Image (cartoon, rainbow, N blue to C red; front, top):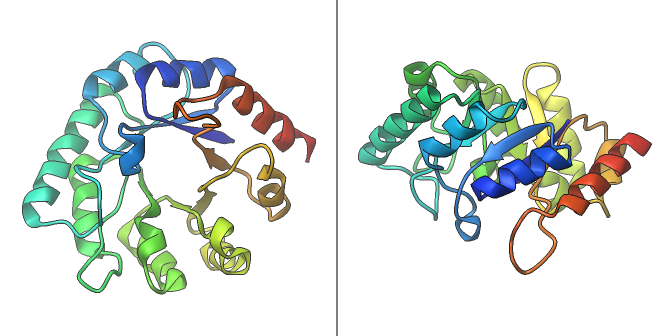
Length: 216
């Protein structure tokens, strides 16, 4: 499974045309991804036939949200659900930079869609406890760049997750290094497939990623 993170509506269509098997839809690449317009999700829902995972993140910066920001996120999440998102990707931390279990759980309960914990997870001091907390909160998947930062810790995260929660590696994954993740047993990969200064999805890179994944 190749998930492509796209920051422009046109890039979503480009990614699917090139073979992307799931889309993470967001805006503002330089901010690390923010909530996309509901119109994008509506258009994609009626045009492509791959799962749509929509970002819920009201601003860039840290993942410590105020009660007002959580309210905003709930409103954004509900709009994305109504537009046709299949799942949401978000994550908020408490004052100790651990996962805010109750706040995340409340957002999931409000919207009722599968939820993916994004790379707020990478800010958690104890990633193994972070896995336990993500499971307790009700997330179905964790997106993490620990495979890039520390492969040994990533393997421990995989082991801790077991069959209870999916682990989705991301963070700088391209066709030149994706084989390393497949060798670590990863069955799904997250990439923006951006290779040039324009910060746009590269169709050839998507095809190269798929080729490398199928060769393993």
